[in-house]
Structures are given as structure tokens and as C-alpha cells.
Image (tube, rainbow, N blue to C red; front, side, top):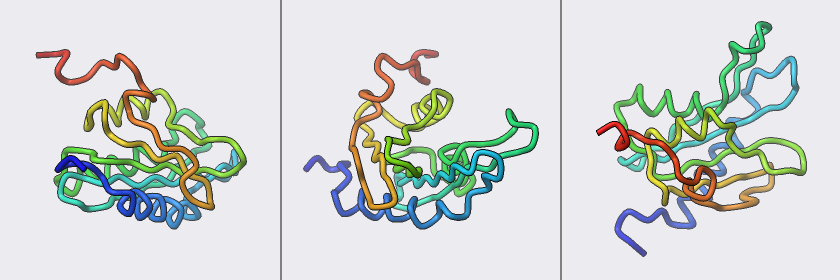
Length: 139
């Protein structure tokens, strides 16, 4: 396993953190609760939930909340992220969140898409957001 690789146990712990935080979401309009957990470069886990607002465009996604918590702690790199939603389908990050994840990670960053039972699909950011635009494009 490469030095910076994320172990299956770490990915499971990340999914468990996202599952555990999901009920804290504020989703009175859609009733679609989402939890997210980010593993940073220091090995710390940061969680977030979706927070809806009566003025619909003003809500935030769980991934955005988890990334904000990571940044507020002083971390600047996502080593892995897990996202969990309800229902039978995959709850993948929206387009805006894909770009936010890209800001702090690389194409090989693992993305664990989970349901209440655990990880449903594991992919990389490169698979989720191919040919992405990132900070290095501005150099």
C-alpha cells in the first residue's frame, strides 16, 4: 500500500462517522438527510450535514459543511471522503461539492459512497470528476 494510501479500515471508520452524523442534518423541506466525513492530512475526521433553508438556494451540503470544519481546524488536504444519504440509490456529491472536494484533494482521492448499512461504492475523485479544473490550473 502506498505511504499515503487510505486503508479499508480508515474508509470504514469514515463511512461510520458519516452515518453517525447524518441524523443531525436539518432537512425539514426535502426530508433527505445527508452526512459526510472527511479524513485530513493529519488523520483527523471532520463531519458535516446538509442544512436546508426556507430560501432554498441558501442551504448547504454535508460535504461543504465537513470541508468547512476541516479548514476551520487548520487542515488543508482531503485524504478521503465519505458521503451517506438515504434511499436505495447512490448519494454522490453534487457538482458544486465535487469542485469543493477537488480544491483540497487529488484525482486519486478515495470517495466512499455509503448508505445506512455502510459503503455501497468506492471510487476516486478522478472517476467522479474527470478532467477537473484545480488550483494547479491557475499557476
